[in-house]
Image (cartoon, rainbow, N blue to C red):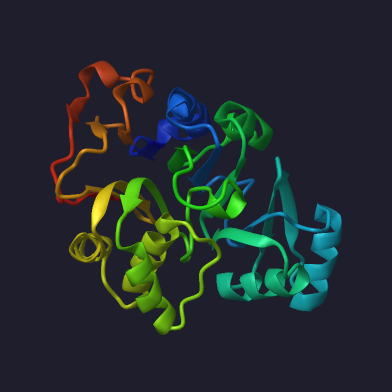
Length: 299
């Protein structure tokens, strides 16, 4: 059992309230698992400044100021900024995402990179969702999209690498409730393509499968249709990118999920109570996603 929440804002007047709404949604799901928790936030001007790439770093062996100096020396020009959000360091610089990832990996090779891109900040860790949300300062986050997850560990260790979201491609994010029965087989297939893993978690296999499909040129709907063909198990997935928000369930669809839509927003959660506090929810169109149907929205 885990809890998933996601919020895709259509009404710009709601952008300043993204963190407030996402925090309340996440904390309503904490009874579905409190081993660890995490969020992915798109567009927050402090965590992922416009015109700069951002890399989210967990378990850094050096403090923010020292990491900034190390990355500055490696970039040999652009000056990075490092923002502290709880236990996560968010490194930003006016360079391409891959270049910044390479610099951070060289500077702190033992640290875990949990997300990167031009628009994305990923914050995650072990512990109670409410405590983590407060440590991140999530309630103050803003802009247009957020995804969250509370974990009850059934696959792999309770550590940062086993926590969700999984953001293994640029500006991509995946959260998962359920399990993939054949993840070991698909993992070996991906490893044969040269794709490396950072955990034993089955969700990482799903995330790297989707990232590989997008890198091959598929759109998000086609990638998720392919995932439904390849993966066995019981699952609800929420997948986001720099311009999209998508939900899919397996053929049995036993893992709970509900979607709500208004003119101002699209929201998804494992249970309705996570949606109950959203503005205008009383007039929202509410429905349960059908098995293996891809629900996708574009910014």
